[in-house]
Image: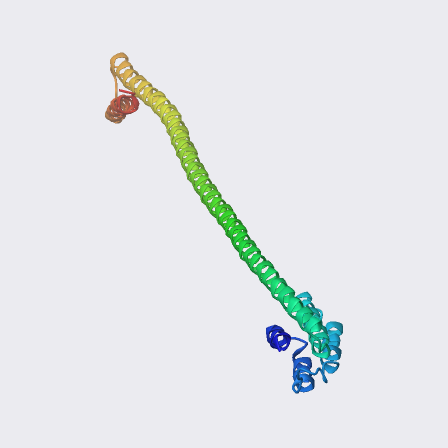
Length: 251
């Protein structure tokens, strides 16, 4: 009965939802009436053999194989009726118990390895995430620095453009001032020349009228009037020419 109880634990250990669920039901149906005489032990191993053939899970295949071994051990123990057979069955049971302890130790070590591997995988994943975060932060910092440099370059370029435009406007004003100065100088020179010419003409007219007046003593009243008009016009021309010269002189 010990082997049967152990077979019960092994079958219970088969994961629900696996590809041996239906076979478990079949196994329990077939070995449900097993007794110490071993009359139904043949059906259990056949069902477990089907589980071995159909399952792709190494752990399930291992458990089914152990269940087969237990069925075989139970059958041998049931058909043996002498004391030696009973002792052999007891020894076999002890061996199974020792094997069970060893397998449990192996399972525990395997579970510990799985936990350690899971921890290492989590640490590797965390390291990868930290490295990715560091790269992301570095990329953000680089992009911000690039944006600052571009903004500074644009500001500097704008300042240079404004300085250049200011210089060009100052140069244009200077050129216009020079042109105005030259035009003004030429106009003043021409004005002074015109004033001199007008003054000279006026002076010549005054001189001519006085010369006629002094040289000709028999002057009629009409001629005298003409001389007076010419003299007045001459003096007016002298005054106008002098005024033009004064106005156009570069004081």
